Image (cartoon, rainbow, N blue to C red):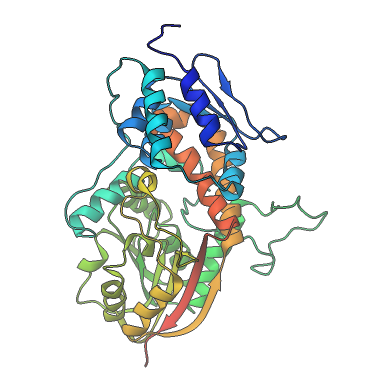
Length: 420
């Protein structure tokens, strides 16, 4: 090895900085920094010197994320990594140690230029949660291609938490119990149960006019119209979603009952609805728009109108918001507000809350189905989305599941109404 690219100082400095390591690091030259855990733990493979360049250019989560997305760092076991994140208390690293690590990384990296930022990264600009910026964020997450989502969602294309629990719809089949942490209810059954649960909570009946905020590919609108006789207006700011949603509505023979609009929720005006379903959309609204969101929904309901708000919430007020990797690669500008903040906005807008229900285990099970489905279609998924986006999604779906299992996130349905 050339003396200009020596990994030994980097390995030594990492071993000093992290005396207890429940993981192994394997470098591109075949050398390793072994785990100090008797069980070994996951192995991080640094495939290229470019990984160090990414982390020197953007120290912390963003540089590490860029190296992973670019394929310069890989891991052998995603779920083992999640366990490390939950259980490992990383020691604080002093400034002097950081400087030594940086110097050792430069020695290991040698003479090389900084690599490009992965194409899958989005750095937003403009006013936070303006219509224009929200449209770009939604496009980044959802407009990967409808076929990509078809690879891991159920046939109904429902992209939100399914409901697997026994008491909903009597879905648990007879026979021996499922393995721990798994359900024998199919994803299709559980998503059907979720949509029906929303319809029941909204007490939908023939002729009710319903607004479906963030309608996705039209699954809830089709369910509400075909099974409950509702007349539905679905809105989305994802153009690709709107195109496929209209086709699915037409194929179901429901074009006379359902209208799909390419529209921001803030642009709906001069109309009144009997009920509103907002399923998996409030996460995109933001702290600085949540009160406007609640007032807007209230303005669109008739007196006595019903609301079902379904969204992800952060559980601990002490937890920081999602970091730079999530913001640039997964959900740009996404904000999972605490349940209390959403409730406050609804109360300020005049809503009366009747029922709140959490589904964290159901979402964990939903996400398990999604990433297992995606893993069964990796070659086609990579062809559609490209290797960078696919790496983002494989990590994101697992990390999200872990957050629902470890008590970081939950998902809540709030049933509320306006006074008559």
